[in-house]
Length: 335
Image 1 (cartoon, rainbow, N blue to C red):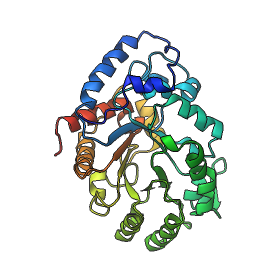
Image 2 (image 1 turned 45 degrees about the vertical axis):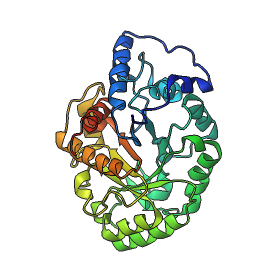
Image 3 (image 1 turned 180 degrees about the vertical axis):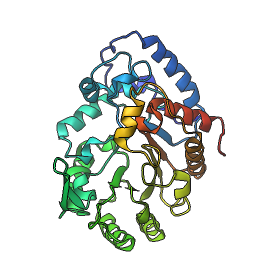
Image 4 (image 1 turned 60 degrees about the vertical axis):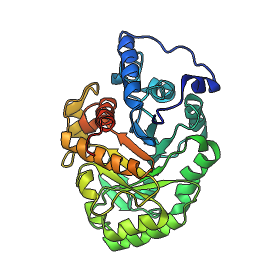
């Protein structure tokens, strides 16, 4: 039997919430929970699927009992989200853009069952080599790039102090740098080594690069030396997850991280406009699923925890992509 999530009795340890408002899709959600629970019971231990965020009204009948605003779900949606049998982790993207108030971390914690891990993205203020003036389209050098003190002060420290029971791996995502600000791959590996060396050992970290030139043997060795995971991503400029294995093979870190954002060669606005509303899989990618399930199975067979975070822009609806991946994994696919 896999670790399919806390039973209802455990959820009640932190108080029975008010009943969720019931919408016209509530019967569909009850069926979804029942079917998802059967799939979850057949998954390998330690595999945690989750979405990149959770505040999507289009998930009525898939994750939520009724349709509520994005704002309402962002504030109070985690309680319902965490009851879905296949959603056993979640991404917190907002920390990439600015510090998360402690009061918000407390609110998130109040909605989650004990031990439910969240994967927060490190601040862009530390991972981007430039400060962008998005309105003007300009960029200047970022003096805090790869400065561990700011990352610890703004995120790692507050999480350790007030959110430790829900602290999954931090995702340290490095966006592509504009011409004139790009580090040579060997320089990036050296600076990343110093950065990781200075981070608290009480937390787990996964590095995600969006520039394929940075995916080198030296980079992989730096991660392995610190017990940090490479993030196998599915995103615009990067090779598919399966191809990344040749540089950063599974098993080099004590856990694995997979992030499915959007297909290689595609862009955020393009995918958003093409796939909305996010209530169906409108662009399935069987080869991506096969590669991901193979990666997950290899790590699970080694006894390592695996986190798989899925964005709506991967195939159109992240909860349904997760269900498809889980069904393939539970059936023994890509073994």
